[in-house]
Length: 157
Image (cartoon, rainbow, N blue to C red; front, side, top):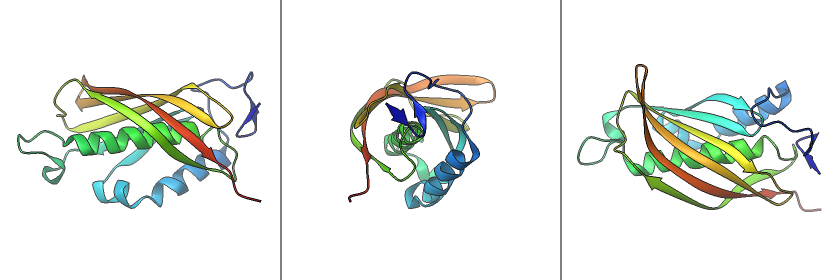
């Protein structure tokens, strides 16, 4: 089975990607209006693993001053989606089929850090682990964890 030009057996989660794949991820991420609106950035892009950072801003909070769960969910969904997308064929796209996120602690800190990691690649459906951390300095608090299923959307033809 091939994932983004690699065979499933040779694929190692967390290994460095070729420049073309990194550029494809960055270009796609830059086209997402919601991520741009929230001020999110993609900081780490590896095979099957992506990190997205969301800096704290008052307009991203809920009534108690914590990051809104919608922001946490959005960056978790995107981190998992792009983690899966690193394994997909270059002419395909990615679509979330479902995800579940357990909110474990209030989202607070200088920033949120969402990490999406592929735990089961597949030809059509891929499953990712999602984790969101509240970060202040060297202190990291686990804010949310979840699972996500994604579909590789191939061009019709």
